[in-house]
Amino acid sequence: MQTITKVFDDYDQAKRAVTALEAAGIHSSEISMIANNKTEELHANDDTVSEAGTGAGIGAAVGGAAGLLTGLGLMAIPGVGPVVAAGWLVSTAVGAVAGGATGGIVGSLVSSGLDDEHAHVYSEAVRRGGTLLSVRANDGQVEQVHAILDEHRPLDPTELGAEYRKSGWSKFETAEESMADKQDEIDRARRAM
Image (cartoon, rainbow, N blue to C red; front, top):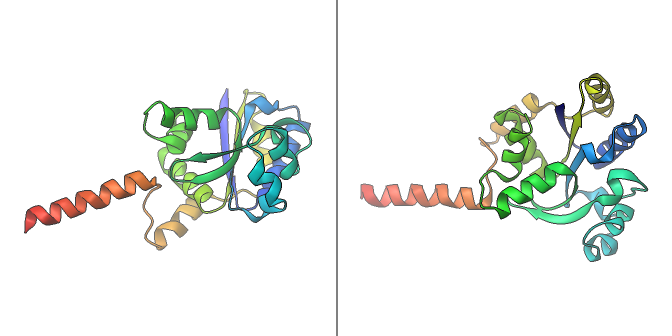
């Protein structure tokens, strides 16, 4: 089994990709979606999104009628903030944080087989409003999954990472990691005085 992960700039693109994957016979239990709750498309019906915690209420709010999209739930992932998410990857990301393990979304992506650099870029893309899809596919489905995802125009992680680095970004950090780094700098400066 292989895991194929892509990130989309537009939530609707990702939603259409999920629909196409399910129509092609990929079971919804093999698909994970994490969409930043800041995404405009998710707020078409703010009352429904803010009042519903999980399940069909969120699915209806984001336009899902069956499969993965009806199981979307609202939650917070450290460093990303509020997201609408569903699938096996989400439980891994949230479970890692709840269990005290490091990594959260980055660790979950790396443990699913994504290289570290792309995991950081994809996590940052979600923080900035993107939608991540991760699909577990058996060997006979890998080519088909790639074709379906590519048809819906995912972002190129190499180009995206280069764009982020131009603005001074180096890696995805949760707020806690960022604060710890800043405190280390302050402590080093104080010792040097």
